[in-house]
Length: 245
Image 1 (cartoon, rainbow, N blue to C red):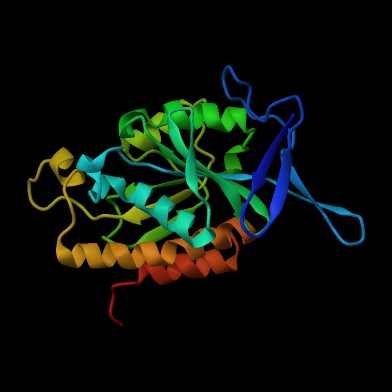
Image 2: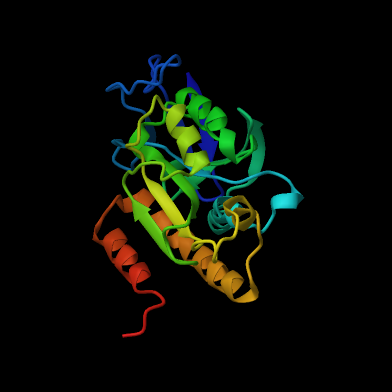
């Protein structure tokens, strides 16, 4: 079975074997490799494993610009930066198919509402045979200061209902990378739900916009280099982003 993936810069073809990297029933990883092959001038083939980049959020204008939707916003920025059109509907998600460099990628914005995000992510991972280590989940994180970014290779759900839903639909697995976007904690005794569905103050919005500008380059570095020293330097720089020394 062949799935063609193209972008304005490169044309790639993903070739999938008959067996899945996740069983359709319970999404158990196997050793079957998923790869994209590109011909080289000397006739050799270089193989690339596709990535699926998933931004979490809520669909509809009502939630646009809220704290809980920064995952959607980051996907939009990556889409613009890499020239990948978000023009496909599949498995209750808005999907963009393209590449970063020569690596095939799927950009995903689940349309199920936050608490049911896994209903999109699980079936897409199974259908496209994406290994766990290449599912990058992008979402808001209250444990980080507003506008601070962090890339990490795995983690728990941290009481984030969207992440929890994704884990449930990946057979409870947590070994997939995360791109966390800090939104800070609710002030005082403010209700958590009200905080998450609130829009940013002007100062906070500036910090988020600055983070969104930095995001696509960080995603590109991860896709092309993995968790390299470059990603480590990025995380370190984010840690002290708003601390004066």
